[in-house]
Length: 171
Image (cartoon, rainbow, N blue to C red; front, side, top):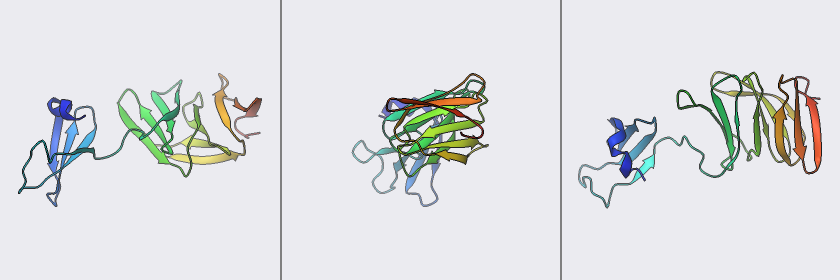
């Protein structure tokens, strides 16, 4: 899948152990190739692999776009919550959890995020490069999350019930 990317090579780096060649592509992705002076390079022994896994490694369960910031949040079956800056084309936050996130929603300010898991929803403050949890509400099977235009309330749907919460106290 990386053969088409040869023309997009931006930089090369040989690791200090001289066992891997790290290739930087113009789209910001890093890939690695096992390197061996004795074998050289041939179609049979070259195996391209992501150096750093930036993308979800499975299905994306939910995606939301911030109203005020150039950010997109995704949750996937790989148990990661990722926040991407779509103007700079880079991953800003990459947080792994113990369980799969089902739904994600940005607060209209772009400073908060809610993630629904199977047994609960968690509210986070978005810091420079991390998510800081500040509230957890026990809710099972949430399938929809959304904020009001002002962000003072949010609603969620679980099974056939719609619940409305005051965002800051979480009640």
